[in-house]
Length: 309
Image (tube, rainbow, N blue to C red):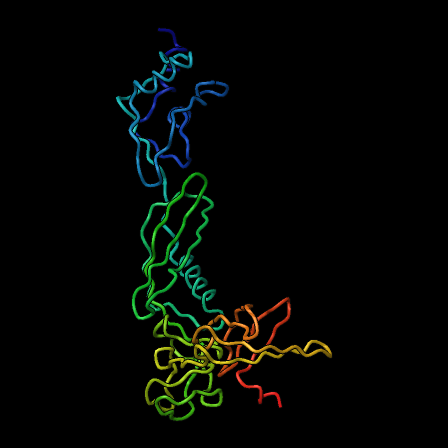
């Protein structure tokens, strides 16, 4: 054995364990070849996921060299090489900022705080990591809320869930004075102010949700008005006669119709012409009042002709 061969044997030795930081594995990650040695770029397949390891046997390496027509006699290989993938943990503060922003987007006029955030422990690749997230369609603000996190970096992709306890204040209607059961709730009965959100499904977030509503029970001043405390009465009943009038420029159009169904505020019902077989649909907008778009024009329909005298 000459001196050059001994030097090569000394220098071309694979360690028993290596740590890498990439998605794919080549022989040069295991052995430091001289510059220009094509064996350095020989693919050894996949790299393990971050935080995990892959055992690469010597016969796998020599087999790949033989298939590529490359020599292996000058390599000193252990029985196997343990290839570990370097990893980092997810950044708690980055997740907190993301989750706070998700709640802020859901409640743009609200104030959001996270008194508790449980961030999952996960091995992630080093380098540029993109994290996005999403909230469940509905949730109970009083409990822990599962927030989905989608993590991507190169070929790496993983979904996980953080657990958040959130404090949310949004503008809500507060009663300015007492209201008796079955009484109408008017705009002047309420004052809008920031109040804690306690029930996602029961919150009133727009004045539109209160229009034409009645109190289910006696309501007290200072109480936050919720959907569960109100009900919508029937504003139009099946068989009611409806007079339709619409003014476009200097022209007034009118028609008499009959309601084909009963409905509450916001419902869309079918109306039938009394003098013909024509029908149209209209949305109920108040007691005895509906409106619809007919032929590109918005008509207002009222239940009594005397309303126009």
